[in-house]
Image 1 (cartoon, rainbow, N blue to C red):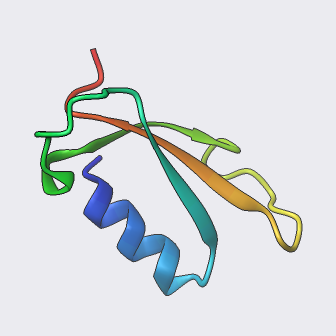
Image 2: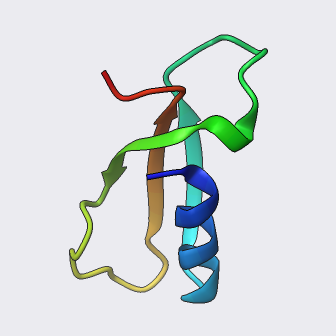
Length: 61
């Protein structure tokens, strides 16, 4: 799923998150990043104060 959509959804729910890139290519535009993995997994109960880790890349191959 595109990072922008995931970020919008998390902000709407007032959830804390951090973005981690798997690609070191600086030329990749953030608008093209795809969320490949989340930790904790989607639909997991979150304790108060949990920060969600979003692993992103230009593609999830």
